[in-house]
Image (cartoon, rainbow, N blue to C red; front, side, top):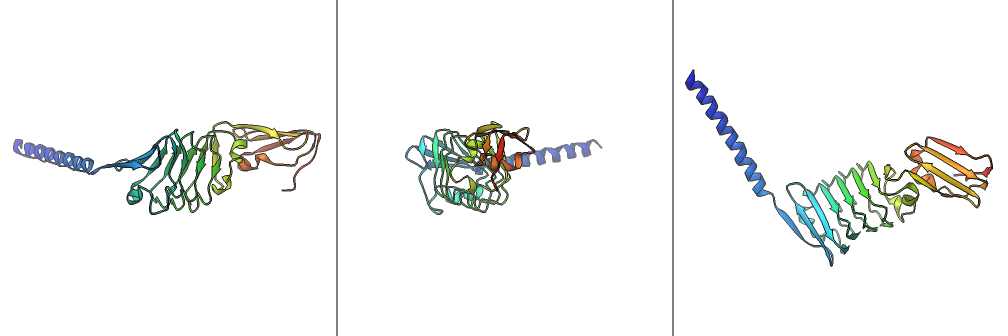
Length: 233
């Protein structure tokens, strides 16, 4: 009986040792890659975590699909983090990174190039700050799993981004829920995407619809009695 217990203990210790060695081998096989991807911008990829980090200051270089520095490792990238000092994301930077699932764009990013996330079929969420001014042609084409965008401003600012309609019509989460402004010569709007309430006030005709970019957020609309006309579409 005693010998049997000892044998079981030895086998358990041996199994634990094998697991530890296997884990060490996996860790040893994990590598870091990196280099330059702009005049003052660098990239670093941790193949163990799948996180690609872009850091530095200024703009990333524009590249083609095959010349992006991490092309050989693109199938290992699960998350991309672009830090605050980076001002633009170069053309085709993450095209066809089929395992990329999330992207965090720093507050300094003002421009997303063409085809940047094209073909990222596993991409589900993207976050960016309210300094983003322009999104390039087909930047999010074929991102069929993209469900959530997290934006650092309000819906009015979001709607003013050039090329914003290249982002699929999905759920957008605004850091600032309140947006307001003019929608006619004497007409004004005030909306809160958290409460889902949109109010049109002032007088005369409403000639624009700045709130339409957040159309899915509105649960109720209050129209002032002096508003005389609404846009047809």
